[in-house]
Length: 221
Image: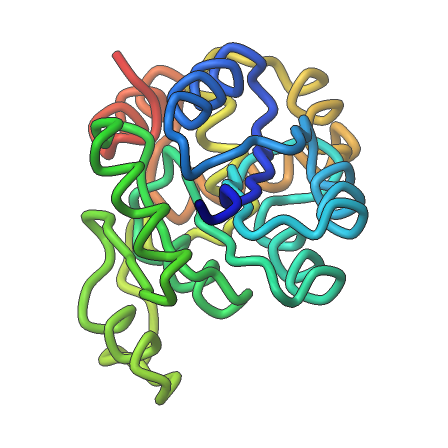
């Protein structure tokens, strides 16, 4: 019998990590060999453990998931990386692709799809599923690196990855200092990101910002 595939879980919510570990550990062809609760630890653990697969969240403390992804590909080039995130928009998908992701799933998928995707990615397939993964992601995935638009459309797609992270955390009810500590930014930088994203989205209050985030699937009701 072949040795099980070695998996590293990089997720800052302990409850979610435990749930993922329980799902994966039940499968005889998977072995969870390590866990990480932030981006820096994910990179360090990937270098130490050289896993076959890394399940990686995109919004984590210390280092963003996108930055951690690029570093993991450098320190553990044999590892496949499957992004598992709440972010459903095209910019995140494209950013993950460019950083070297082998797959992209949103967290509301059933466990059967998660397991099938893990096996597919480990077999060398590339699997990108998110409502925002349109023709641009398909084009980049095919290897030409070009999308169909010349620039971002107004709205959610116009936000940077960091602005999306701030939007999500604001909509979750976190205060400026909490967000700053979580993302390792200064409160002033958080305020600048919030002002910028509100201007881009043409929103003026926190309640409307929260409603917008819920409507676009960034946070749950």
